[in-house]
Structures are given as structure tokens and as C-alpha cells.
Length: 315
Length: 315
Image 1 (spheres, helix red, strand yellow):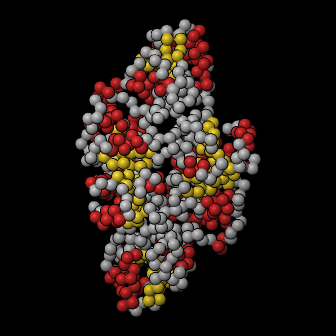
Image 2 (tube, each protein chain N blue to C red; image 1 turned 135 degrees about the vertical axis):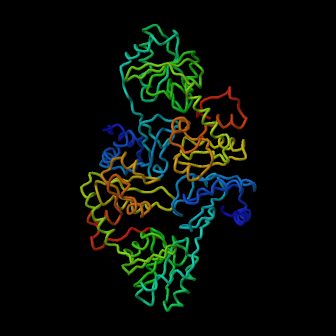
Image 3 (cartoon, each protein chain N blue to C red; image 1 turned 120 degrees about the vertical axis):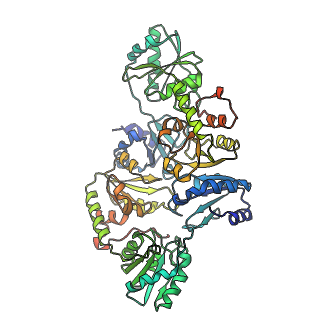
């Protein structure tokens, strides 16, 4: 159960009478209880029932009916006066970094993590210092407001460390592979819950993406997907990509969905919405879905040596 | 292939330079070709890639990037200066009404159909007149702008005939069952493509809905779904339903989706979005989804004798 007493105080301070609540899937079960608790305190409550995967996807539709939107689970990718962000913290013992010490080559490394763990970044740096390693923690850009924080679409805080070796603490391999492609540094990943350590290698991902690009090369038409979500609207990029090919047409989408891709029947798509979609979800998609840099390569506007991960950096 | 020469002329008359295109699933395959044809004529084109099931679901997100939205496949449920509706007609030989003559009891019947066939309504009435039957064709309300036209959510044109017997020409049994519940008249349905004739009976639907209501009765919480689609936002109704129960909370949804229902974990839902969802899609939903009149009955605000079909009538 999410504690609401502190939240209620902040809502009252702002004079809010009606509140919209938004939860990512993993926290959505908290919706009925949180809504009921706020209703008992006299607030008009509306819960957003649309899918939500990040702070880039604010429930502005629900906010249209409320004074304030409370967005749970993510840090801000944009500050707005009518949105309260309630990131959810997941703790672990910084001592787990013991596991990663043998895998580190340098005495000076960049340290990055995701929003759930970024409150521990100083404790992790202290642990490393006690073991003779200097951890560089750098601010990213305005989409990652907390120093040391990376997103699946934004590795600015890793790049800004300027380190040749970067330690990523968190789950999954997507972030560390992205960091490697974005920085060309050596990247070591530590899962703080399992203690698993690995040096990531982007080669497999790049080979897989090359195969997707080959599938797309002869498509009769390209749908250039542009998102209509609050923090995923890269319209300037999408328009620039359309200008690269006679075969390209803008396609506006809220949810980038296999069913609609199939219905519309474009031969291939280019995704300017959440950058992770093309990498993570190709398996779900009925046709090739390229990233913007990949489409640039296909159109001859970028060289293969310049292959890079798609990032959504602050303008 | 949708012919675009007439459309291009109308777009030029209006001085449009950029165009958003929206297709329902059945026509979506026309998107790449139609977009390419308009692009060749010098228009900036953006295709809406969101699901679309009716004129109640305008792609306003895509229209935000264009001068005009062209909405294919449906008649207007609301007129807007920046939307061109391009309904698609499906022809048949009015002589098929021969099949329905033995099933009609009266010499004076109401005649209704769906938007695809409503251009044939006068020819059908002429055929019936030639066979001694007066067909009453009545205007509905502003959501069904063509006399004789019904929607799955609006049977005003059937009710307005004032007839004790109504002939519905079209496919499926949902519309005629809705007409029966809405008018309490005898309703005969003719499928103009197969020639199949049936007198519909709403009893089975009502028994099925009674079982769904029983399932919902003891739910710990009710999510009152309110749509954020252009022509499905029944917020006043949703707020009134919330006021009927301490256990009710507003839930804003774009697509009414089983996955999000399950994630949010309300014990049952009440649907104020597209009225057909509760009837047609209960089988897809993880918990009971009631119509507004059904929730009113559950809360004691309506009697069971007043059971009626959920309609979305013009305000």
C-alpha cells in the first residue's frame, strides 16, 4: 500500500481539490486503494487507465479533469507545475558492489543507475572509494534530472562521466548495452538483487539490427511513427526522416501496436516514439521497425560506421 | 483503392496544405496508397495509426499536426469545420427485401439501417410501397444525421418512427436487439447480403446481462470508465454514477482494454465509453463490466423493470 499522508499534505498545500492518479503497470494494483483513501479525504479522484511505461507518458487526458496529476513510479522527464512525480525507491545493500570489484579494470569509473536506485548512488560511491575506486557521478540532461540517472532512452549521465569504464547498477542488459553504444566505453553491469556481474557486448544487438535493416531495405512504403505521448513527440525528427525518402509517410500513434501496423500495411516502419520499442519489441512486430539512425543509414544519410543507439536527449 | 480526385478538390477549396487521414481497421490498408497519392499532389500527410471504430473516435492527436482531418468510413457523429467525413457505401439490390415480406406482420413499419446502406433507404421504401407496405423513415438525433440511420449506440431513428414493427436492414444481431430493447417494438432483421431474415429476441441478452450483474454485485470496488475519445466522453454520466456508490472511482481510458483492467484490479467496471463494449466484449474482459443502467439497478437507483439498453444520445 502506497502511503498517502504525505501526498495528501502536498495536495492540500497546492489547494488541489481534484486529483488524477497514474501508475505504471507494476504499481497499478495500488490504484483502487489509493483512490479510495484520497476520496475519503474529500478529493475528487480520477485514475488513468491507459498503459504507462515512463515519465515520458503523462496522463494529460485524465489531468484535463483534475487540478493535479500524481504520476507514480518515475522521476520527471519534464517538470510541470500541475504534475507531482512520486518515484518508487527500491533499496539494496551497497555492499553488493563487492561482487563487481574483480570485474573492474580501472581505478576511476563512471557510475550510473536507474531511478529506482539513484538515491543509493552516493552510498555506492562511498563503498567504491573505501575499496580504492573513484566513482564519477555526473549530471545528465533535463530528462534525467538526478546525477547518475540513466533512462533506457537517455545515457547522457553516462557520457558525461567521460570515463573509459562505466559501472551500471540495475537489472537487465538493455541499459548497459545502450551505454556501450552511446559511449563506446567498457561497460560492466551489476544486478543488485542477484549479484550477477557481466561485461556487456553490443555486437549481438548490432548484428541483429543489421538483419532487420536488410529486411526493410526494399519496403514499398515506410511509416514514420511519431508518438502523441507527452514526452515522446519527436515531430522535428520524424519530419526530417520523411524528407529523406519518397516512400515515407508520417504515422501518428499513441500506442505503437503490432495490430495497427498490420492493418495499415506499410512495408516497414521507423520508430521515433520510445527508442526502446524497436530494440525490445521487434519480435512482436509484423514487419521491420527501424530506429531513426538505422533509417538514415538505409537512405544514405549516415554511414554504417556511425551506427549508434537511438537516444531521446533533451532539446 | 479509394479515389482521391474529388477529395483533393475539396481539400484545395478549403485551402488545406496539410492533411491527417484516419481509417477504420477494415479500410486501413488504403492508408499507404492514399497518403502517397496526396503527397504527390503536394500535401503534407499524416496518417493516424490509432485504432478507430467509429465517427465517435476522431484522430484529434493527428489533426493537431494538420489543417484538415479526413475521416473515412463513417458518417459524422459531430460536425466540425476541420473534419471531412468520407463514409463508405455498400450497395445491394433493394429487391432482396422480397425475402422479408412474409415475416412482416404490419402494413406500416419503421425502416432503419446502418450508414453503409442508408443511401438505399428511399429505394427500399419504394420497393416496400410497391408491395403494399408503408415504410416510415424518421430522423434520429444529431449523432445519426441521416434519416433512417442507426448506430450501435443510438436507436433514435428507430424510436422516432413510432412504429410497432421495425425492419432493420444490415448485418449482425446487435443493432436489431438494441432496437428491440430501446423501442419494445417487434423487430425483424434482414441481412441484405445473405438474404437471411430473423425476428430478434432480446431475452437471451438480458438473461446473460443479469448473470454479469450478479457477478458484479459484491465487488469491493467499481472502476467507472470514462472515455477520452472525442465522441465518447460521457463525463456527466460517469460522475453521476460515481455519486451512487462509495465503492466507485472514475477511471479515464482511451482504449477500454482487458490488460489495463486486470492491472488496475478493480473488482468490477462500469463502462460509459462506447455502449457496445459491455455487450460485445464481456467475454474478453477479466471481470464484470456493467452498463450505466445496470449499475443504476445494482445501486437501487433504477428498477429491474426499467432495464434498458445503454444508448449514447445527443445531449
